[in-house]
Length: 58
Image (cartoon, rainbow, N blue to C red; front, side, top):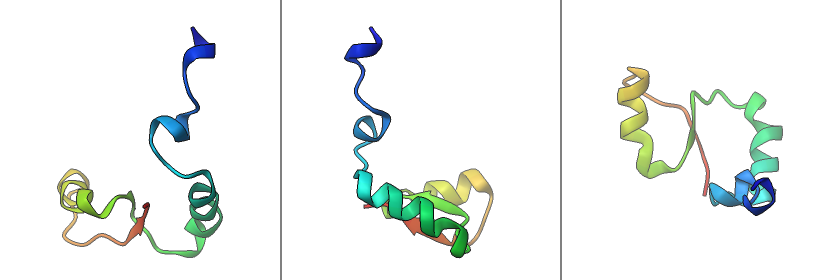
């Protein structure tokens, strides 16, 4: 069964090079969220924030 499951980045549709960039630069930014811009409003609600410093994944 495990052999049939694709890698997690592939399942999440995240480019491997973009993810590496995010992982290496995340500490330098003041991001409170990570994700697609279209989900920002949902993230603000879930995190109970009025503002987000978002590191965008595209």
